[in-house]
Length: 261
Image (cartoon, rainbow, N blue to C red; front, top):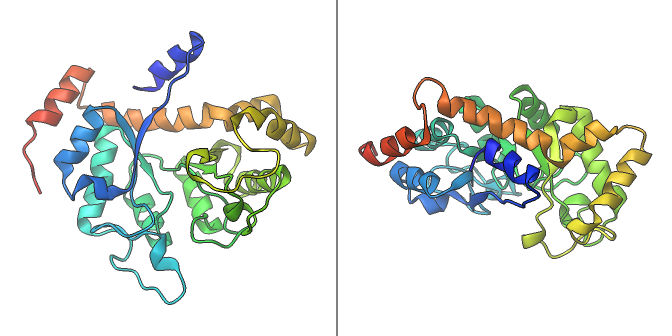
């Protein structure tokens, strides 16, 4: 699936969903496995989940009294990011340590995403993104998609629509309107904001954003999905630059390339 497929589905009134892998453990430290995942439809990989991989530090190392194991990314971890760029797979930095965020942003030739993270300035948890990283994400043309888990919005089990609005507006204020999106995380969270219990409540969120006086209809379209499509399209440009003319050539390369690691 690519951006053209998503746009075609939308035009036809259809729903589509990207396949992602949360946690680089799934690679078993093998680039051929990464290539195989892409060939069967995976379009984004979260480099870690809540614990370290053999090649990337997770948010775990940013906790009190903890120390990094890999100083962000090992050399192999950097190779994973570069191979994801070459494949056209989105690099997802949700769940990773700050040093891993910085290392991936330095290495990646394509924009990165945080698929479900919020603003650390408003809720000081290691799952959220600090402001200095938000600025770098914007410089790289990337995207931070706000998580609606109450613990990441208020650092408590309760939150409101206004708390979600505050995080969205904070990321917009630091990184710009082109670098903020929605990544609620409804499939994996225990406490949702009152009034944002599921996707059917998004009109309530958009109405609240409009009431702040900072959001136009065009801005809301970016937040709702156009920013993500733009990032995905930029990632695809890295894939197609100078190597593949069509998907058949790409798949042949994936299967024919010998294991280098």
